[in-house]
Amino acid sequence: MKNFPLILLVSVLSAISSVTVYKYFEGPREVVYMESNNAKLTTFTDQLFSGKAQRDFVSSSPTDFISAAEKVTPAVVNIKSSQGGDGDFWSSGSYGGSSGSGIIISPEGYVLTNNHVIEDSKKVEVTLNDKRKFKAKIVGTDTSTDLALLKIDEKDLPFLNFGNSDSVRVGEWVMAVGNPFNLESTVTAGIVSAKGRNINILEDLYSIESFIQTDAAVNPGNSGGALVNTNGELVGVNTAIITRSGRYEGYSFAVPANLAQKVVRDLKDFGEVQRGMLGIGIDDVNDERAKYLGLENAAGVYIKETHPNSAAAEAGLKKGDVIISINRKKIASTPELQEQVARFRPGNTISVEYIRDRKKYTTEVTLKNRSDKKAKVADFKGNTRVLEDLGFELRNLRKDESRKLGIIGIKVKSIFRNSVIEETNMDPGFIITRVNDNKVTTIEELIEELDGYTGQVVLEGIYEKYPGEYYYKFPF
Image (cartoon, rainbow, N blue to C red; front, side, top):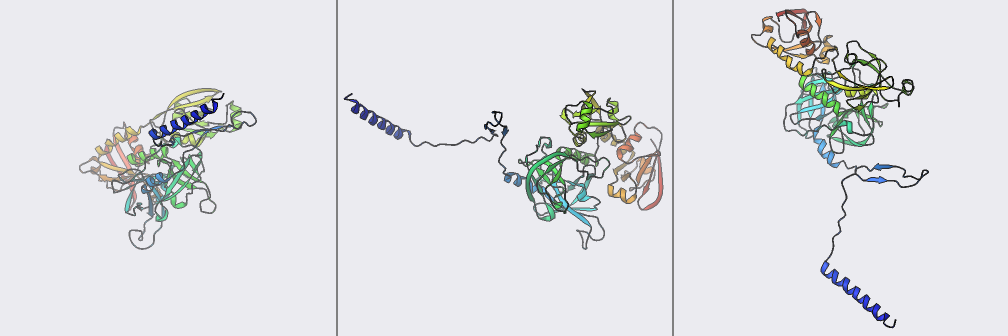
C-alpha cells in the first residue's frame, strides 16, 4: 500500500501521454451529420389512457415550394377571349370578353384551360410568362368538365407534365399557379382539403364534378391555372371557387389531372370528348340505405335504375345493386364513380365490383356512348376514311355556333375535287342535320348511320347565310 501513490501517479502520466500521442498522429476529425431524404417515422410515446403509443404517423416533407414554383411558372399563361364585334383586342375599340389562365402541356403549343374562360369566343389571345403574345386556335371544348384545349403556333415551349391525381391525399401540400389580369404568374399554396367534391356548378346534362378541394387562394382570374404538387407536377386544373363576396373565401376547386388528361387526348384526336357510359341512374349510399342493404358502411353508389340496352344492363347490373369499385379502385360516392368511368371511351371494357343481396360480385362492362352503341373510338377514327372516300372534311358545330343557329349539326369544312360529294353540288359551309331522315349531331353519329348501309344516301341540312333546307343525294 506504500507504493499506491507512486502507482497512481504513473498511471495518470501514462494516460496523459497516450492521449497526447494519439491526438498528435490522429489529426483533427470532421463530423458530418447525414440527414436522410426519406420521410421519418415519428412515434408519440406518451402513454395516455390505454398505456399504448397514442399514434404513429409519417412526418411531412419540408414545405419548400421554390423549386416547384421555378419549374411551373414559365408554363402558366394568361388568356384573353373576345366575343368579336368591330372592336377587339387585335384592333381598336372596346370588346366583350373574359380573362383567365392556362397551362402549356406540350412544347408544340397546346394549352389547357377552362371552357368558361373562352366560351362563345371568336378570338383568343395567349400571353406567355415572358410576355410574348399569340393568337390561339380553339381545338375543342368539353362543357361536361369545363375544360378546353387551345393551340398556339410556337415550338420548344416550357410545359408541365401531368401528375397522378389519384395519389393526391387530403392534407397534402399543393400550389396554385395562375396568370390573372396579365400580372405574370401568381403563386399561392395550401393543402388538399377534400377530394371527389360535387358543388353543382356545371350546367351540362352529363356534367362530371369530382373536384379536388383546396384552401390555396384562387381568384377569378386564376381559372384555368395549374394546381401542382411539391414536385411541380400538374395534379389539377383550377376551375371554381365558392364565394358570397365575389372574392376568394377559402375554398377552391380543381378538375383532377387524370380526368383532364383523358379530355385532352380526345379533344386533340377528335375535336370532342368520346365518353363511355354505363347507362344507369345513381345515388349515394347514406347510413339509412346502408343499414337496409346490410352494408358494412355507408360507402358506394346505389343503382336506382338501369336503362334498357345500356352497357350496365348487358353486363347484368340491376336496380338495387351497389357499386363499390371500378377496376379495383374503391368507389365511395357518385362523383368518384363519374370520374372513374369518364376516363374511358365507348368500346372500352371496365371491371365493376358490386354488392347484391349482401354478396360481392364482379362483372365486365363494355361501355357505350350516349346512343347506347359500343362504337369504339379507335374504329371511329379509322372509319373517317369513309368521309375521305366520299370527298369531304367535317367538324362538329361549336356550342356558340349551335346557340346562334338554334341547331346541332356537322359543318362541312372542305370538299375534295372530283369526289362523290362534289358531284352533288354541295358547298363548303353546309351544316348536316339529318342522314336518311335520321337526326345526327356529331360526326360519330353520321358515320354510324353510314356503317353497313347500302343504297341512296340523303344528307339534309342548312346554310348559315341562306334560308331554307337543302338536300343532297348520292349512291353509297
